[in-house]
Amino acid sequence: MKIFKSHFWYNKNQRNGIFLLGIIIIILQILIYADVFSEDKPIDNNQSELFAFQKQIDSLKLVEIENRKPKIYPFNPNYISDFKGEQLGMSLEEIDRLLAFRKMNKFVNSKKEFQNVTKVSDSLLNKISPYFKFPDWVVKQNQAKNSSSQYSDKTFYKKKEIKISTTDINKATAEDFKAINGIGPAFSERIIKYRSKLQGFTFINQLYEVWGLEKEVADKVLAVFKIQQKPIIKKININTVEFKELLKNPYIDYELCKKIFNYRDEVAELQNISELKNIKDFPLDKYDRIVLYLLAE
Image (cartoon, rainbow, N blue to C red; front, side, top):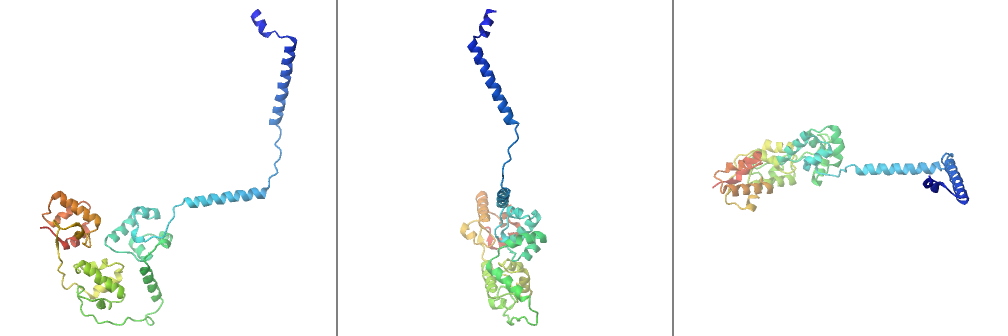
């Protein structure tokens, strides 16, 4: 008992101090309780300023959302890749149709032709066609077509008839090609230049490979000009040809040239030119054209 008594026994001054401390604690508790449960004082807010501030925040949110959207910049639809086509909303089938068309070394020169090739819907075409960017000469050609369609056949200026010197497409001159409606100086020279690059047309449909030449115009050319005598093409030996020389083949690009040389290194020597078909990812659709310029000796 003495032990407990020593801990709980206080003198008068100590008891007074404890009593005073208790009173102070009670007063503080009352003040805290009264402050917590007191009603909030009304805040004088300027509603017009708050509304304007909220409107500014909303506009900034809209700007940020717009900035996060993927941007579409002007582009040439002839060079749409798988990734780009998917971004634009094209299906895989539509992209494949365009890529197959381009593999034939053909180009679309208007949004209508793009739709004819890819079979995209009108809604998607209207959405992406404003971003189509064609070369200047294509734009001018389309403008000329549109302006000419506004006139009737009676008022349209008829092209002066030109007598052709031959119907052999490999011997025809630039002037001969100008006799075809739709072929002017630029396209006639382009046909001649491409014919020289090929060393002459061996297949009649090689004319469709001329850059920018529309199928309808090419059909008009082929209705008059034919291959009456196939050209004699100078062939090069695939086993001894140098890289730069092989690259001059109009149907061989840099990547295919590398694959051919890698294959030649593997087999040491090609016994037959048909071995090119063994190369991985070799463009079989171009085989007949590629081997026009090659032989294996």
